[in-house]
Length: 362
Image (cartoon, rainbow, N blue to C red; front, side):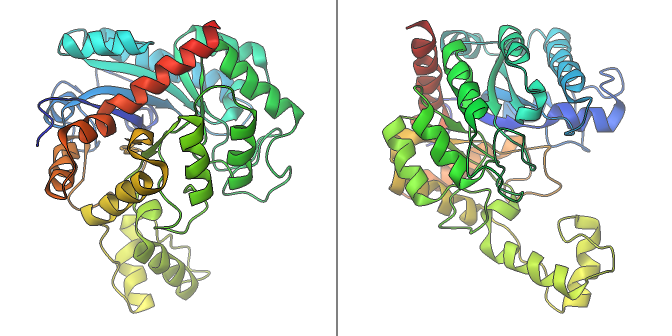
């Protein structure tokens, strides 16, 4: 089985912020229709990866300029699509995504990565949706005033009243609730409140890799009842327990030396100080998460959200957006059927998009 029968719809790609950091959103500086080796993403590699749909992430720092910067990223995605009309098409609904794929284009959708991008304003939320933003991750790495993050000290134990109002308004306007980055209690709280299926745009299974960014099994079970989808990510720190353990040991061994074990340029020195080489994250690690989410949540509740251009390193066999066929071939070798691989590639997230629109129009 290859991806010839299907195209991947990936839940999370950080090209917008990566391109900003590379050249300030200057589309003339680097031609994405050719090879851009400093990025994980360019048009030729999207083609080789058989990517038919991509949620482009709108991530900006959590500061007083966040709303403006989010609009700037939205503008970048629109200009990107306009620059390459033969390759990309801005889409909003499942039908539009399918039509773009049929026309041989990469359907381009947008997702805001963090509730700080709406500045505590439901009005901004509504405008973002009107401009084509299809999901919002409720938090990023830090809490917002209305929701706890997975990687910050809990304050609310989930959502407060305004957080519940945000979720309900997202349901009403057809914006997907994304539970990547939020605390487990926020996951559970949002699943109690929502009337539409939710997503994890780029998260994996906590039972396989025990970090707060991943979804616990009880949440995956509830996700199945919600009819949502967990889009498994390829980030080493969310994927490999051996990598997580090495990072903890290297950080402790090099305390006060200003070295970050998550930065590849620091890792050789940290391995020397720690006395242990960094373990490689591999395709097998990703396969373990995909199969665990399938086992717990079911085949109808799994997708892919690689997080390319949002992380400095990836599993050795999955270095960039051209890599998806490698994963699908590995799963086919493990007995996945064509129908099951089609659900993973795109079928499940298309169902969720349609369900969210049904709730919004009810």
